[in-house]
Image (cartoon, rainbow, N blue to C red; front, side, top):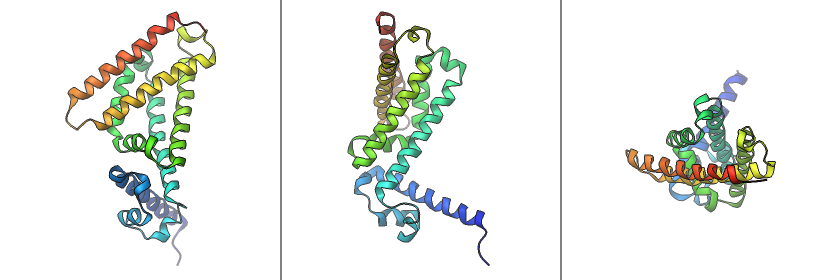
Length: 208
C-alpha cells in the first residue's frame, strides 16, 4: 500500500528543511562556498540522492537560504509598519525592532552578513537583489511621511537606501555581539538612532 500523498509531501518538506538547516549551521564556520554536498547531507541525516530531489547544487541551497532569510526580514518590517508606536516613533522603534529581530534570527542574519561579500556570485547577487527590493519597499513606506511627500521618487528611494545601509551595518554588529552583553546592544541602538536622526535632519533642507 502506497503512502498517502499528504504524508509524502510532509516528509519531503521535512527533508528539504533539514538540508537547509544543516547548510545554515555548517556555513557558520566555513562559509557556504567551502561546504560539500556530502557534509550537508550527513548533517541533515539524508542520503545524497535525497538532496537532488530538492536542489541541483549547493548554490541553489544558498539561494533558498537567502530567500528564507529575507522572508524573516520582510515579516519583521511589515509587522512593524502595522504598529502605531513604530509609525509614530520611527527612529527609536526601528532601532529596537532591528536588534530584537537579529537576536531572534541570528543564524539567518549571520548567513547574510557572511555571504553578502564572501559567498558564491549567484548568492551575492541574490542578496543584493533582496536588499534593493527592501529599499523599494521602505521607500513606499517613507513616501507617506509628510516631510517627504513633495520629494521625487528617486530622492525618497535614496533616503530609503541610506536607512537600509545603516541597518545592514548595525545588524552585522549585533550578529557579532556576544550573548549576555546588553550594554553592547544598547550602544549599537544608540549609534543607529543618532545616525538615523542625522539623516532625518537633512529632510527639511533637502530640495528635490
